[in-house]
Every structure is written in C-alpha cells, then in structure tokens.
Amino acid sequence: MQTLLHVRRRASRKKQAAQWEDAYYLSSQPADSKTPEQWLQTIRDHWAGVEIRNHWRKDACLFEDKTRSRKPHIVGNLILLRNLVLFFFAEHRETYGSLPAFVETVASRSALALRLIRSKI
Image 1 (cartoon, rainbow, N blue to C red):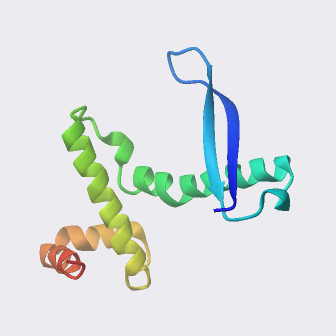
Image 2: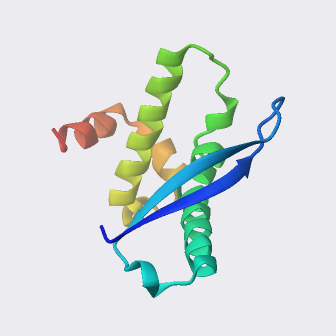
C-alpha cells in the first residue's frame, strides 16, 4: 500500500445526535496522484459500487431487510447464506441469467445446492 487516507466525517444515525467519526482508507496509488477532492470522489464511488453490487441485490432479490429475527446467530447465519448465494451466482451467471432465476432453481433442486457446495470443499 502506498497511501493511507484519513477522512473525518459527520455521521448521523436514527435516534442519535450527529457525531464526528474518523475513517481510514488504504490505496495502492501514490498520494500525489489525486487531489483531495478526487480522493473523496474515489471513496464515494467505491461505496456506491458496493451498494449497487451487494446491498441492493441482498435486499431486493434475497429479502435481507425482511428478516424479522433479532437473534444474532440467526441473522449472522442468514447473512452467510446470502453471501454464499451471491458467490455461486457470480460463478453461474451465464447459465441462469438473473439472480431470481438462480435462487428459484436452487431452491427447487436441493441436489443442485449440495453439488454447488461440494464443488468448493
């Protein structure tokens, strides 16, 4: 790593007063390769991509926000399962075309689900 970025930002959360927090980012690019404004845009672009690639798919296609359990072990296991679904879908995207089609196929064919898991063991 060539650059350590330190960003001080004001964060607000539901039912809490806004407060300052520190965030740190590592980059393989030299520090002088971008202006401070460009570094901030790079950070924003990264997190926007994360939102599009992962959070939206977990919520819209895998119904993450509809999880009603508040038990940490259940929620944690569901997170792992959703990540596993996204991992296998990324490998088989051409075959199934869409995440909902992949989920429906695997849900209806338990032997396929087991075969996918065994292929990585």
